[in-house]
Each structure stands twice: as structure tokens, then as C-alpha cells.
Length: 252
Length: 252
Picture 1 (tube, rainbow over the protein chains, first blue to last red):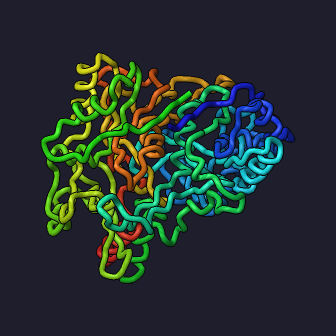
Picture 2 (picture 1 turned 180 degrees about the horizontal axis):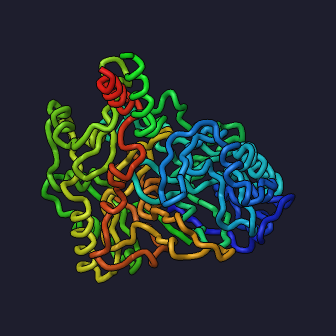
């Protein structure tokens, strides 16, 4: 049985707030060994002071961007940019967030979400003496599918993949290519209780203690597929244009 | 509180088996109004007799394929084909499944997973007098991220999106582009209790009764983004090649 619930009583988070203190106070004595604490990146960004004026939004997106993957005019005068950001994550607007932010401001993603997760996990473990894992989430769009799901952008003390590649299925055949991204599945499960418009930024997932481990396990960075290994490293229109120019140049 | 558990006691499924009978027997009296029953597509395919000899795997992939999206030699002599299948779903090998299948066979996806979900939901509602939703899942890879997650390929009696687009965030600003794909999030949550190698093909998700509705709600087909609206409708290498040829032809 998996149980997932949101922590009540996390106040509005401001720069400099200590998330461990807020989470431990809200959780009381409810946390147990093997629990996975799932934290919305928004409150991590707020606590870390990753806030910039909304007027600087476009500049902020540009400075968070390593590479534009695709862009398209999605409404008159508005161009959606899908980019690879400095964390390697492919996201609309580089993950710069303008909803649920203090008026007139936008939020950048945490500088290093895996390090943020490690600090939170370490703090909770010390404060409560319980061995928890921590996942930091963002709401991300997908290729080929409408809508968004919450996915893991930071992790500590929890296996991000359930590696079945060495295992066999019930018929004894090797499960050669199966490597479930349990961190993303946990992020999605937690979103079902956190909600978007409400202020419930932290959830607890109980029932997969087998996934909880040492704080030096690989973080969510391991989920990012390097562009050179990705068949969709560039948008179709952009790749076509690059090819067109190269093809024309090859003849002339 | 969200609770997710796998149903014990579903036997090996064979062609012609009635999944409603098997699910109702395994669930006993445990199902309640508002529960969402999450069924692995593999057992739906088996029950519907969507089994072909393994020797015909490549032909099966070809016949399930509407359009090759991208392909790459992923190991010597083996080419992974990412295709759009006849359901509109972009998947490796068109969703043709060779793991956990009877020896010497492979499984095709259900002919119409939304119709399969509707039949199962209708059957459970009639048999038990409880208003449940049903989601049928497949294990799918993603662009940009390693590993797979379970996602919804069929749905009935459950909202596949939580539409917040008309709503406002906690600061009162419109949540203009946010449309969480709760069906995919529920599929992922259920995978955390079903496991891949074990024979637990059915899970129950309790705690989001607000998402359960009439059987004529849009199914999982609504999650599929039409290729013409998708910035990643073609693999980067394939689009580059198409562009190169067009560019060369434009000059000569």
C-alpha cells in the first residue's frame, strides 16, 4: 500500500526561510524511516531567494538558457521557447515561473536542486532521526502529449531509477530496456495531493522504503538525457531549417 | 490522503478471459465510489487475444505504425524505431511488447484502449454498484529524460486533465497554460505498486473521487497531441535530412 498526503501548515515561504524547520514543524512526529518527502521547486526557489522582477522575465529566461531546443509563436505576439537550461532540463521558458509568485516577480529554478534536496534530506534526518528521501519537483510539459506532469528535478537519499535491466520478467527473459524512472513517478503521485492553485508545496509518499538509501546516491541530474544521446535534441522545424541551409550550401 | 494498492489474486490472463470478472473477484468488496482502477495494457491485450508469433515482431511493428518519427541504431544490428502508432501514441516499437508475454509471442496494444476502459468501467459499475473510473496504462519512454514511466493510453469515467486554465493561482493570476495530465500521473502512481517483473497488473487509486465522472468523458485519446501541433513531430536527424535534401534541391 502506497500512501501519499500533503503536509498542512507550511506558511508562505520567503527568502532566507529554512525549509527543514518549516517541514519538520508541519510534519510533527508523522515522518518515518523510508518516507519520501516531495517538495515543489517553487518553495525551494523562494527560500533560496531566486526571485527577480517580472520585467526581467525574458532576460531571466535567456540567462537560464544553454540552448534553444525549439520555439514557436503560440499566440499572437508570444513565442514559446523550449530550451535546455543550465541544469540540462528541457523546459518551456527554461523553468522560469510566473505563477504563484509574489506580485511583480518571477522565480528561477534552484541553483542546484540535487544539492537543495540533499540539504533538506540531511536536515530532516538529523532533526527527526528518520531516514527519509527527498525529491524536488517541477511541472513540465512533454513531447507528443498534451498537458503537464510533475517530474523530479532534484533528489537525494532515494533511487531515481528502479533498475530492472539486470533482472528477468515472470517468464525469465531479461528486462533489457526497462528502467522505470521512479523519481518522476513519485513526483507525479505527489502532485495528485498537492494541487497547483493551493498552497500545499510538500507531500509525503510512504510505502516505497526500498527506494530510500544513502544521501550520496545519484541525484535527479542522472535523469537528464545528454543532448547527444537524444533523438529529439532539436525541434523538428529547427532541425529542418539547419538541414535546408546545409543542403543549399553543399550544392552552391 | 491518496491510497494506492495492487490487487492480489489476478491470475495469468488468457485470450477470451473476462477482465471484469477477474478484477471484481480479486477486489472482493474493497472497491468504493470514486476509486480509479488502473489496468496494465498487457493484460487487456492478452484478454483481447492481441497476440502474434514473435517471429512476426518486425512485421507487427510495421503494421501498427502510422509514421516513423525517429530511428537509430541503439546496439549493433538493432535499430530502435520510435513511431506514431495507429492510436496516435508515439512509442518505441509502436508499443509492441515482448516482455512478460507467453513464450514465442509478442503482444500488440489493445485495438481501442478507450473502448476497453469503458467496457471495464461499465462492467465493474454494474457488477458492484460502485462508480469507478478506469485507466489503461503502458510503459513509455520520453524525449529528453532517461527511463520510462507508466502513462495512460486508455481511460473511461475519469477526467484525464485537471483543467485549471480558467482558474487563478493563490495570487489571483490566471493559471493560463497549466493543465495537469492527471491520468498520466495516476498511471505513474499505480506503477509504484504494480512493479514490472511481478504479476500485479491491476491497482486501485483512492482519494481523487473528484476526478471520477460519467463514462462518456473524453478518453486518453485526448492526451495525444496531434503531430501538426507538436514541435517534436519528427526526430532531429530525420528532420535535418529532410531539410538537407530540400535545400540541395532548391539550389540545383
